[in-house]
Length: 181
Image (cartoon, rainbow, N blue to C red):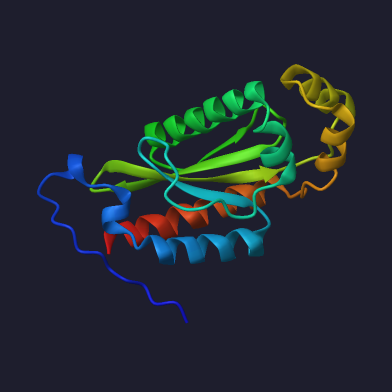
C-alpha cells in the first residue's frame, strides 16, 4: 500500500510555495500512473510555469513519437497545453478541450489557498470516430508521414466525452485534496 506523505512547508508567503513543496511527488507519480492506466488517458503534473513535476503516464505514440517530435507539432502542443492551463486557472475548475492534433485533452488546476500552483494535464483520447482526411491534413501541416500518423491514430482510445470530464474531475479532486493536507 502506498503511503501518503504530508510535506510541511510554512505558508507565510504563498507566492513562493511550489507544487513540489507541498505534494509528495513520488506518491503523486504512483497515483497518476495507476489512474492513467486504469482510465486509459495520458496524464502529467506540471508546475505553475508548465514544467513537468511528474513523468508522463500512458502517453501515446501518436502524441510523443509523431506529433511532439515534429517542431511544428510540438509548438502547437505547448500552445494547447498552455491555453488549457490558462482556462482552468481562469475558471478554477477542469477545462476539457480539443487539441490541435484532433484529440481531446484536459487541464485540471491545482489550487492552494486560492492560488494556482500547478496543473494536471491529460487526455490524448478521441471522443468520436476520427475523420481520416482531417488527420492526414494535420500530418501534412506538421510535417509527418501521413500513413504512420494514421497507423498510430488507430491505437488511440475512443471514450465518451463524459468519461474525459469525469477523469479530469477526479484528478482535480485528488490533487487539490493533497495540496490541502
